[in-house]
Image 1: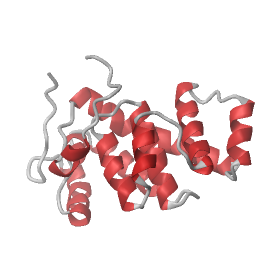
Image 2: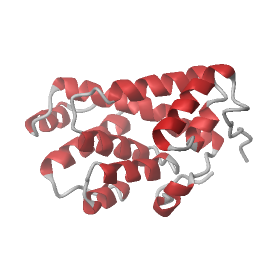
Image 3: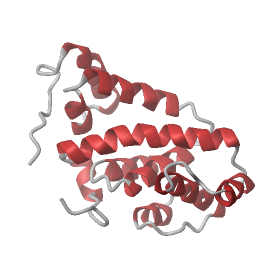
Image 4: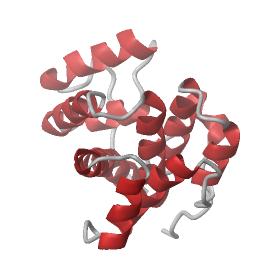
Length: 187
């Protein structure tokens, strides 16, 4: 069993406190992921910084949510998958699309499926995506810059997903209803 603390703003290293306070101001609570990342202030700062940068990517809010959900599912993240499920609903991604991403199935919307599929292939192929996959992504109306921004999202989610794996981050109460276990690798 993992033994990573869930820091409070009182117990966290000094450098982590401003980010924890910002999370509390924004969300009304400090997510367990942030509470665990607080153990390593540089990691928490990197995650917060990359999150802010990814919000500037040239995707709609719905597309960003889909990408982050697809990466979390592909990484079998028990914590980030429900977190991004909730956030995807906030962007009005429909329930059928959310369920398809979580089940690793194609989406009905061709453009969103091109985005999901390319994101998944980026992870599975470790960045060595086939020319045909890139061509299909571009044909769906995305750009080469968008392909690079997916790399940013994969890096961002690798930070949080790997923390979830090593620290066994417990779900926050708002995430419990969307718990994700299907496809998780055995411990």
